[in-house]
Length: 228
Ligand SMILES: N[C@@H](CCC(=O)N[C@@H](CS)C(=O)NCC(=O)O)C(=O)O
Image: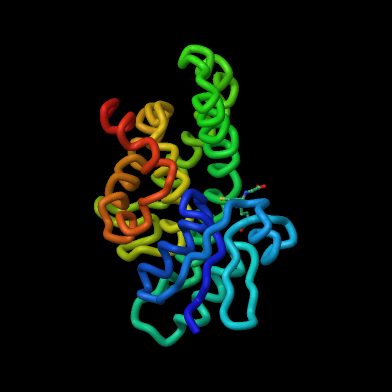
């Protein structure tokens, strides 16, 4: 039976898993639910998304889903895990940075509140004033990410952990794709120029295009493009 991903196109963690399955050509169906809806709780006691199901197997938590995808992909030529302990450790560091610092300071602290305020019709000046403190924290995180990226010696035209796409790229991209669609993208361009280049490269991949529809960036694309 086909794998089922219980999640939402707008969810960054769901997009990570969809990017992986698209990259590895593993067929799946998306069973759509937002967090904390009945369907989300049916598969996850915390009401979070995504969940992966494979027949009777139910896997919660993106990290565990990652491990399961690697397991079923074991004998295929394309892999999301690089060779060698150094590169594996680099991947894990990026996964943790994306899921913790970047998700918290850019998505939870800025993207979601901004969209909530825009939805309520608040004016741009008020939105910017409310986000001011969060932007200061975001700046620190973006600087640190840039430092981490530069010290990892990412090659021009390469991916975060070498010459092929790994889980590092797939955890990082959805967060930065959403963030880049906000006016606050300027902070990323200023503080993280190498990260910005990587984001733009990844945005051109076919898997980014295949999973774009329904994301925050998709919903904001008109205002985003006109302000670029
Ligand atoms: N630790 C979870 C986090 C997943 C997560 O936070 N998903 C978001 C959607 S992108 C969610 O369910 N948010 C609802 C909430 O935090 O209450 C994982 O790694 O899967």
